Image (cartoon, rainbow, N blue to C red; front, side):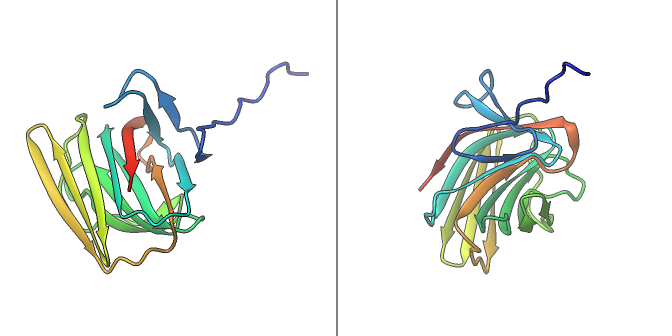
Length: 173
């Protein structure tokens, strides 16, 4: 008989969690941050409010997605920060669930391993993402936005468990 216990499930107060996201007390602007491995780990919540503004800071070794306007299954929209370049855009895409999503077909190339300040603002059917970092900035827009719900969340995407993204300072309005 084995004396090993199963690992305790990950918990982040106020969030529903899938996979292995965690809190990192040593990294962030401000600290702490949420650390998402690129193994499709995710965390989401629904405050049952229609937010028109989200802001956060993100640093990624690859890519990560911010879901918004989603139902409780994760179907809706996302804004991706993608640092891989070569046709892999930071931009908007549709989501089918917290673990299934599309990829942006246009946008910009985000820098790797640098903090990026992201502000998403929804004004009717248009969502604008303004991103700034030391030495650069980019703005992209999504038109035809129709929210599927009021849930929002973070997704580590799918580059593998050795690729990490840190997110801190999330604010909603």
